[in-house]
Length: 211
Ligand code: CO
Image (cartoon, rainbow, N blue to C red; front, side):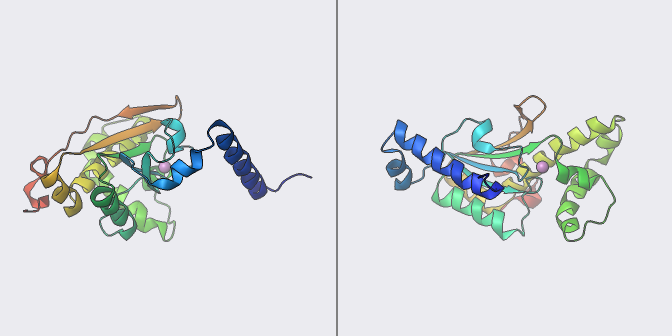
């Protein structure tokens, strides 16, 4: 009998668990003990960017938050809670914001269609466009302009992270990095945008907290 789509997920899970046990009888005992991830990954919900697969990372190594267009919005309790837990409790050493070319959320920001509630989310990307409109409007090729907005959006989220009190407070105690990356599913590779913000002093004074 053919399995329904969701049933095949459960069946594949059973196979996976059996394979893991077969290779390492202690696999799940070890997994259940604790998590000590070194990375916080903030990525897009897009199903074509499977974090562990594209970075060949085992379970337990990446603490993950995904939303539409990998946004860091200061009023979003979800991302802020993930950030606080990752920085203060898990003591992660690297935060990675990973966008991707061809992002539907970023594309929606370039369009004028009313999409209902999601307008509120997409609005943040429109602000990124507006901040960088001179650079973007100088790019005549529509696809290249779209690619560039994806990159600028990642850069903006890196700054949004650095501008939180959570990150700035942690910087007073230890060094950790925030990286801006873009995944390209046209070739499977991740591009490092080489954004370097490592201390509060790298930010405009209006965004600095005094500790
Ligand atoms: Co996306």
